[in-house]
Every structure is written in structure tokens, then in C-alpha cells.
Amino acid sequence: MERLLIHTPEGVKDIYGAELNNKKALSSDIYKVLGSFGYREIRTPSFEFFDVFSREVGTTPSKDLFKFFDKEGNTLALRPDFTPSIARCAAKYFLEDNMPVRLCYEGNAFVNASDLQGKLKENTQMGAELLGDASADADAEMLCLVIEALKSAGFERFAVSVGQIDFFKGICEEAALDDEVIEALREEISVKNYFGAEEILRNAGVAENYLTLLQHAGDICTIEELKKTRKMISNVRSMKAVDRLIRIDELVSAYGLGDYLSYDLGMVSKFHYYTGMIFKVFTYGVGDAIVKGGRYDGLLERFGKRAAAVGCAFLLDDMQAALSAQGVLKDEEEALSWIIYDENGRAEAIEEIKKLRAKGLKVSGIFYDGTRTKDDYIEYANNHQVNYVRFYGSME
Image 1 (cartoon, helix red, strand yellow):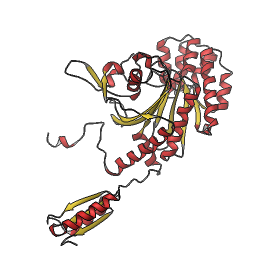
Image 2 (cartoon, one colour; image 1 turned 180 degrees about the vertical axis):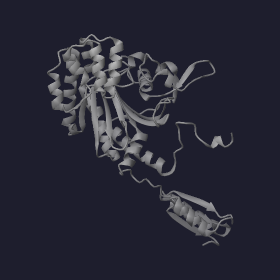
Image 3 (cartoon, rainbow, N blue to C red; image 1 turned 60 degrees about the vertical axis):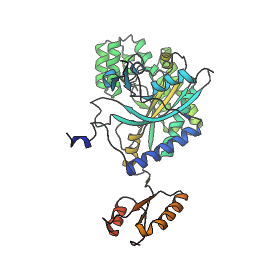
Image 4 (tube, helix red, strand yellow; image 1 turned 45 degrees about the horizontal axis):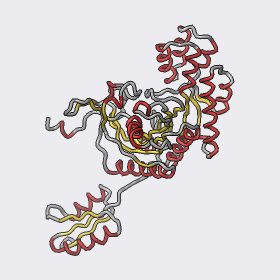
């Protein structure tokens, strides 16, 4: 048992040294961009009342939450996702004036799932939430913010895939599909299984024109192809969804960032609170999206305040892995100095330590106790990123 205590539980890990420094640098790069867009930092608790993440809210399934009880018997849960927490907090503190509010955050989220295919159960996220603005301009701002943040972090090759929940819902409504068929279809389209989608639709007796639209809703397309799809639609809900995407493309292009966008009308999310635009960012080196987000206009009403909202989440662990795989991870080696002294050199060493720290350098003062040699210190320093070593006293 004593041996087991030095290991972490499955799904979590220790992080230190260069890996930690790189993550902090990545976080700093993103924060600079968030700040330049006018987003202000907020911190919410690591755990909330269970109902904040309930099925009705539309977030992570209950079976995948880390749940526990307080002394009063209330059921609590570690946050699996920041958006419900931000929505709960914003509904309480920020929206009395009915003006747009821009908030950003950083912290760890927790998902107690066994099917994460090597992913951690504790992961670090950063994000931005624009509350109280239902416009296409707000959607476009969120996409521009994401693109600029990724560029600032060092990404050169990435794609922002944008979808619209209402396109799929509108086609399903027009085709009169029941909930069971819709859910099965969502599963197949989300993994681009067109043969499975076709089988579901044919078994449901769907007309050929709906079959074509739904079967290929998950095709990645350009803005020009999206405009052609618009001409094939006859229901108002889906038409409005595509029109909204076309307008968003125009706005993002006005900032000179339209080339990063592509469109996926079959995009879905495990979070059911999304109501409009939804997006994911993909790059080389990892198998999943490194940024996710979308519009969730109904979520704040769950906490007593009706307000539109759109947001994003940067998955820092996956971003860091992608940057490493692409060979563009910034080398954030921590500059550290050692001042090693004995009784005879203490006074002079302290003066040197004070002088170096006053210059903003990181300095460790190490008292020599006679158990190591000068070469031992130098060898250890070379192997552990200590940039400067000086001896004072009889070792000098």
C-alpha cells in the first residue's frame, strides 16, 4: 500500500518543469488575446451543486460526473465543463443592466469516464463567454478571437469547422422523424458514417430529397458550397441556419480571417445546451478538436436570467500536445541560478543573491554541508536546467 501512494489515480498526472512552464506560457499567450478583445477574468468554484450540471441543463451525463456529498447532505459535483458554472454566476451577478458581458476563465475540469481513449479525467481549459448579445457579430467575434489566440500561441496550420444545430433540426422536423431516429442519426452523422445514416433513413421511410440532405449534412464544405446547399432547402428553420452561417462568414472575412473557416452542417455536440452556431478547431498532431464552442441562448434561463450567449473552450492539454507534435512548442526553459556557499562565504554570497534577485533573476542560495563535491553540484545543475552556478567560501 505504501508503494501505491506515490502513484496518481488513473486519468490524472503530475506536471512540473519544462512541461508546466510551457503550459503557463501557452496560457499567457491566450490571455493576452482575450484581454485585447475586452474579456475580463472570472473564477468559479471547482465544484457546484449537482443540479448545475443536471440532465435538464444539457451538460455531461450524470454517470460521468465526480459526485460527492457535503455535511448537510447536498449532492455536489466537480465541474466537467465551465459553461454552466459561468452561466450560473453571470445570471447572479452580471446581467442586471441588460448589456453584453465578456468573461474569460482558466482552470481544471473533471470527467469520470472510462471510455476517453487515453484522455485525462482532469484537463486544463481556458475559455471566453460573450453574454447578452444574440447577433451574428457576436458569433463572428468568438471565431475571430479563437483564430487570433491560436495564431498567437504558435499554430500556423489549423481549420475552424463551423456548423449550425438548427440546420439538422429543421430537416428532421420537416421529414417528421421521431426522437429515437433523430438520436440514432445524430450518432452516425457525427462520426461521418454515411452508410449507417442512409440505412437509418431508408428504414424510417424518408423521402429521397431529405435523405440526400441529411445523409451528407456532415460533409465539410466551403462557403460557396454552403450557398449551393441553401438552394436545396425548403424549411424556414434550416434556411435561417444557413443564412446565419453565410452572414458569419462575411463578418469573419471582414477581419481578414475567413480562410480559416469551413462548414459542417452535420456537426453535433454531447452538450445539448447548444442552440445555434457550433464549432470545433482541428490541427495536426492530435486526433480531436483543440478548441470547441458555440451559441447557447437557452442556458442562462435555467438559472433565472434570459440572455443570449456564445462561448469557446481552449483545451490546453491537447493544444500543448499538438504544438509539441508540430515542432513549434516554445522552449520555455526556466532560467535559474545557484549560489553555493559555506560558513566562510555566507556574507559575500548573500550580497550576491540580493543583487541578482533585485535584477529579477531566480536564484537559489544553497548552503554547502560537506556531503557533496563541487563536481556533484555542477553535474546536477547541467542536467536540471540550472543556467548559472557560483561558489563562495572555501569551495571557490
